[in-house]
Image (cartoon, rainbow, N blue to C red; front, side, top):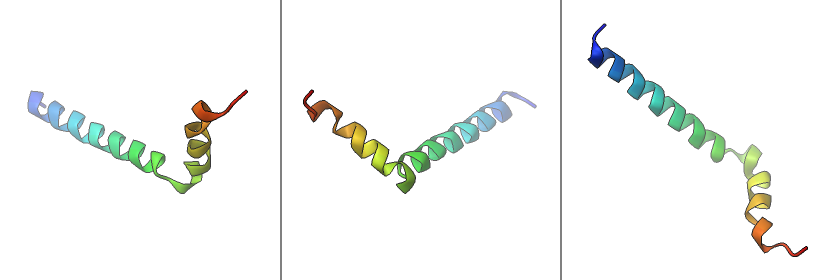
Length: 45
């Protein structure tokens, strides 16, 4: 295993992590929570 194999592995793991975060952020299950959080600056106390 040389440095190029390690670079390839890190690239693939990074891409999978990024895609996992994108899927999590855009999932319908989290939509209500994110919509509520988006409105927090506009709520009066």
